[in-house]
Image (tube, rainbow, N blue to C red; front, side):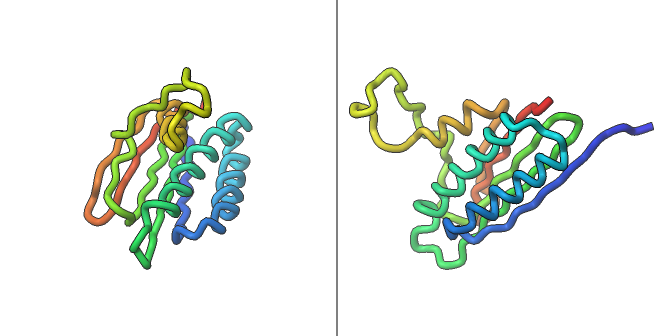
Length: 142
């Protein structure tokens, strides 16, 4: 007998910041249906909103047909997130972590979103596949 519980969600976005509401609604529905607690739901929402905002603001400069695909797979308490975009080739994992001991006025702008991605996942890896940036993230949810 196989008692594997599997839930999958795929979200397609164009890089328009107005779609963040669509992203949040889809994530809430997915996590509510899967019985995932609010803390994990909020963490994943933060991760994906940060990635999407960065893609929309920076990754699609000069690109007219932006495509973002977010796939979530929940299998036996392990969440796999795949974030893929056809933006400018960029590995966010190469960014240095911010120095959180510096005062806000002494810290350079940016970098916290990628820091959150790394801090709130158990594993994250980047690859460039064809025309697409791809981040694969793992997170134990229960």
